[in-house]
Amino acid sequence: VQLQASGGGLVQAGGSLRLSCAASRTIHSSVVMGWYRQAPGKQREFVASIRSGRDPNYADSVQGRFTISRDNAKNTLYLQMNSLKPDDTGVYYCKTSIGSGEYWGQGTQVTVSS
Image (cartoon, one colour):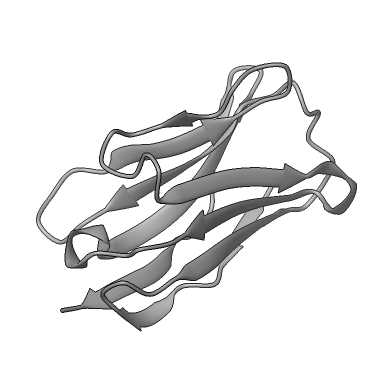
């Protein structure tokens, strides 16, 4: 499966962005999909994940500001980001794991100016 992330950009602190991640084929709703990010000079970190039948998971740093969702009919994962902070700056990646395979999107840059 191929994942294509989009929607990043430059936004002022307090603003909003919505990221999208389009999958090349259907991914069953029971399969976990998630977002990760990597800030300059830092390791990649977990942001949020979602699967059917369970509440979404969020990193403490984004809880209450970000919302993850998926449209299974469109094979697309979303990340709605509100109240953005400069610390949210980084490259955002979508990811899924199917069987023994781990699949990452190419990343989309999010820059939040103060």
